[in-house]
Length: 76
Image (tube, rainbow, N blue to C red; front, side, top):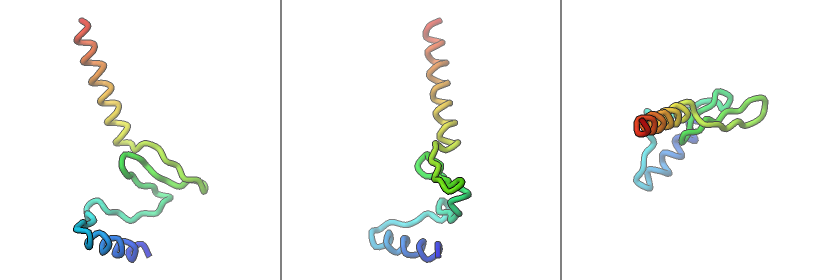
């Protein structure tokens, strides 16, 4: 079923001059979760859980750390 949908989406995009990336396209069960645009989507005990992805959190922490370190050097 999922492969059929993937084929339909691919043909839809192809008519518009776009393609699906084989490297990035992954078919998985919603219970396993997936990352999309910096968010993690997963179903747990019948509820959809949406939270920032681990990579997105790491990036934000790194940016905050850089700002703090930069400000610390400017004060001293």
